[in-house]
Image 1 (tube, rainbow, N blue to C red):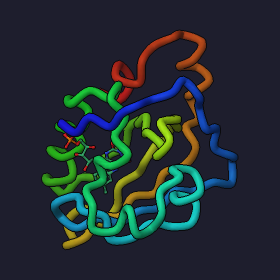
Image 2: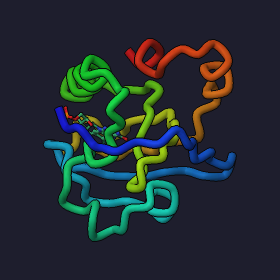
Image 3: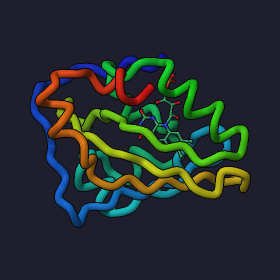
Image 4: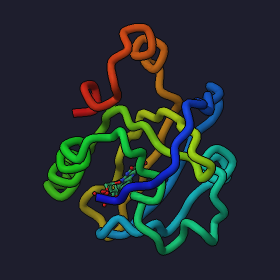
Length: 132
Ligand SMILES: Cc1cc2nc3c(=O)[nH]c(=O)nc-3n(C[C@H](O)[C@H](O)[C@H](O)COP(=O)(O)O)c2cc1C
């Protein structure tokens, strides 16, 4: 499990028109990121391309969520859930990704702003309990 530290308590709130898109190979190595991904995460393209998607893994995300993700996409099925990601500077953002092209040699991933993040904040539930 990749432990990306440090983290802050500051949330980068996505606008409604933000759409984070990334593509990986079958091992999860990033092959493409769009401008919104760079703007929100704070990483440069050079720091992302060729690296595993766990570069934005937030330490509060439970391993079980990613096991479910990989079991699902390896079975050729689309996966969706709620994911808390870590920015380069330790801030965080919520996304609700939709995986596509699961059976092709690349996997692409479009993440819209998480519509339920307000509800989660109110209930104080960690992403884990929703994402798994
Ligand atoms: C298309 C695709 C997109 C992914 N997006 C994310 C993501 O946004 N955040 C994340 O933490 N992991 C994402 N993952 C899963 C990571 O590759 C990795 O399995 C996860 O971060 C756990 O990594 P670790 O067990 O090596 O720590 C994605 C995987 C794929 C195939």
